[in-house]
Length: 132
Image (cartoon, rainbow, N blue to C red; front, top):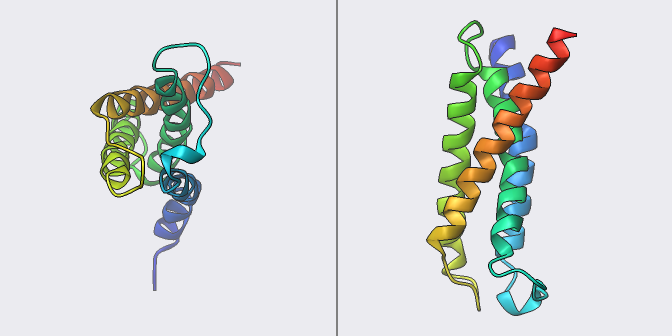
């Protein structure tokens, strides 16, 4: 029998798993199927940052639900940022096998920054709600 705390903890990771699956599906689409991003040079880095900010926030939610309470937000942010960065690395490796897509280490940097920003944003939002 699985303890109640573990079941509740694993449920906290379901949104991150679903978002990760969506990222995997998007990474499986050949590069020619995506429209060109107008304007900025390397605008795709902003897209990566935004998508992975959501993943970072969802990983923070999972870490918050499973890590021991009382240690503060820093371990939760670190876990969320690490998981997001590792997933970004695997996503870029996956793109090596997708037609007309290539792995880009700068995408991993954008993914890592997005994951960290998403987790930090959650901490800020929660701390502001508690302060009220």
